[in-house]
Image (tube, rainbow, N blue to C red; front, side):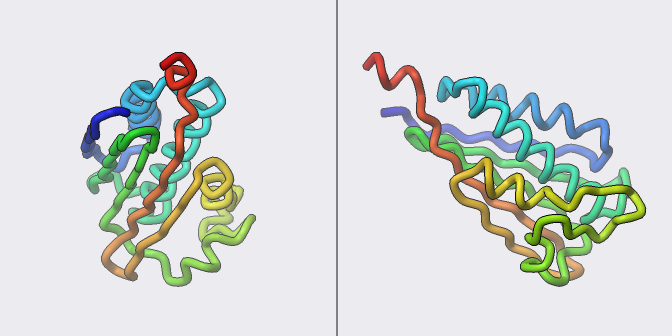
Amino acid sequence: MRDNNYMKLEFASRSENEAFARVVVASFASQLDPDMNELTDIKTVVSEAVTNAIIHGYDGSPDCMVTITAKIDDDMLFLSIQDNGIGIADPEEARQPLFTSKPELERSGMGFTIMENFMDKVEIETEVGRGTTVRMAKRIESKKALYN
């Protein structure tokens, strides 16, 4: 059994910080000894959520903040990606495959679908004019557990 561990990261809502966020969360999650597929899933969902916050939540404004918290509890990784942007008017519509509020940017509209497919649990808390928090959880089938 692992002890709980926790991290918090805040960064400017600039697209170049998306890769930074991916690496930080992947490094933190590496304590659970994920396999390459699990690690790729984690990096992908962080990328999708951060990109959504920057492009949709803040409409590309680089002077806002994105906050990521991550928690390890036994074999579970819990992630929260938060913005204080415009919020989502219709979260159920936003969760539909191929829906995008920015078709002019050639967005695929698959962000939430990817998050839901790669994580065990995804929750969206949003309020128009106040922002969005995406909470996700994933059980890591640690190889270390096989040897203990």
